[in-house]
Each structure stands twice: as structure tokens, then as C-alpha cells.
Image 1 (tube, helix red, strand yellow):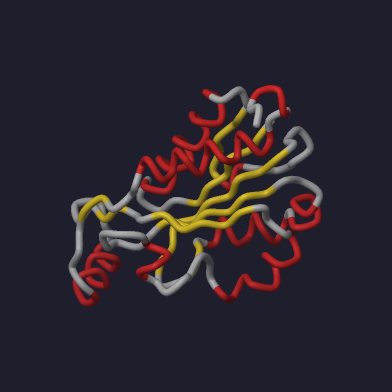
Image 2 (tube, helix red, strand yellow):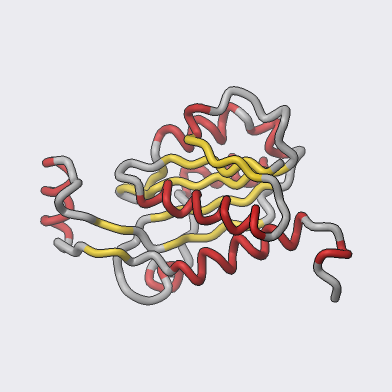
Length: 172
């Protein structure tokens, strides 16, 4: 079974995680999508996908704590990581000069050795923002909208399913 764990502040990253879970299941994997802070053990999971929203260049606390708490178990399982947050059109990785995860996590991510790391665009809905986040957003750019590329997300999830599937399901 694949665990798709996420840390989401306003629901955008949760929706990405749910899409990853749906794609995995559609391609023959058993998957469970859960908030990172609800996970107490990895015993029943053969692989893990972990995603976090990004604010001010950092992951949410729940995702960082998940990575830290389960680092030894994650090292023994296939692991994929994603970040969600940039709000500009185009490829978010290119827009941020190759950024894929917070540099503060570099050592920890090196320890757990994920099979893949990616960055997806995010969504800003001004009506859902806290006053503090609204003020930060307004002072930085004031951009609102949905910048998630669902096709890119589905392809990435499909690649995970293929990596986990027996050869017979995906012949060369």
C-alpha cells in the first residue's frame, strides 16, 4: 500500500495529494491519502509520497515533522516528495531556478534518499486567506488564482505507479 501524506494550509496541497492517490489507484496501486500529522506508523505502507505547501520558501511544520520523525523508516521504502506553492504561470521549477524543496531540509532529504522530488504550482484564493497571509500576499505580488497543472500532477503520479508496478503491468 502507498501512503500519500500531505501538509496543506488552505486545501490546495490536499487536492494534489488526493489526485496523486486517485491516479495511483486507477493504475492498480492501493493507496491511502492522509494528513501528515495524522500518521502514527508506516508499518502497513510499502511506499510513501509526501507533499507540503510552501510558504516563504519553507514546508509546513507537519510535513517537516513527518520527515524527521519517520526518517529511518522512509529510508527503507520507496519515497517521493512534492512541494506546492508557486503562483506564476509556466513551469514552477524553471521559474524558481531549479528549486524543488527547502534548502533547510537538504541533509534530511539526502538521508531518506527519495526516488523523486518535484514542485507543483499552487493556488491562492484570496477569500480563504487569513489576514496575515492576505497581507503577505498583497505585499509580495497580490497574485491570486489556481496555478496547478493537473496534467503534470497526473503524469508524475503515473510515473510513481509505474515505478511500483510489476513489469507485467507496464511492458517495455
